[in-house]
Image (tube, rainbow, N blue to C red; front, side, top):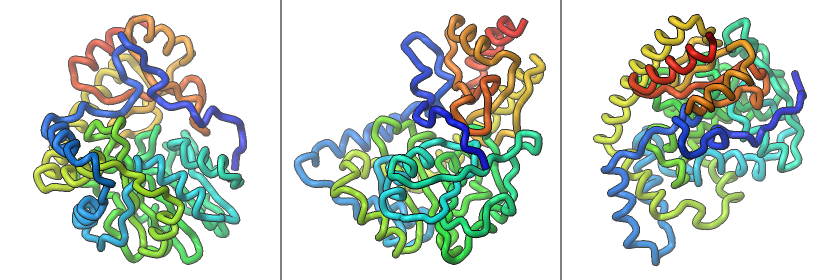
Length: 341
């Protein structure tokens, strides 16, 4: 358990300013068909949002009843709802991971313990690392910022009666086939899976995500949510992204990410850059000597990368790199080579 102070409110968008190539934020461009679907919904702005269609479409996507789905204003809102709705005696967050879960719990007055996975072990999750009496456990899969994908049986082993197990799957759709997702599991006690439409579909500005859990847990979260929390355009996006054609395109994008990530890894290997853990998502965590200076020099050359020292368990020599198409990777690798030389 560690309690060092980190800037939990720092996120990748703060690294990016106009004129820099963005390797700090893991969001893809919004496809035109999705922009059109959102634009079409604007004719209904005079009416209050009705989530029923989006809830049903999302539930069908994961083979669950609609009462096991709660639509949220991005996955980040779900962390706030958790902090408001639950009163954990012993809350544990597995790090390194997205910092908003811990930040939301602390802002609501809850004490939080950290289980920090070891870089020496490749940030591998071991269920024995989590205290048996923890009644709230939060883990990411695949994990931001390490890009590690934990096995479904390993994560599922953390579920037990009397515990809420929160699995942040915001990046699950970046992995072809989503092999380790628990989104369809209805047999695990206390399981709450959080998903986001932000990353693959380029909807960071629209704020749309959802929670999947047993009906009683969904009702507890919903009781802490303001009325009409998810806008009509965001609901339209949820319906569109759950359609079969969108699911097929999502899988194609995941395979493209895997190919582009392999290309990035080859370029990093040619520069003898240390990759901190085997990556499986749309970003790669690296360790470089004098990371603060390297990040600054990259900015001077036009590239924004995500600093790692705001994540518990990481330090200033860690940098997170978003996976981009090969042409961007080539330009970045050339700049990084200059900096390291």
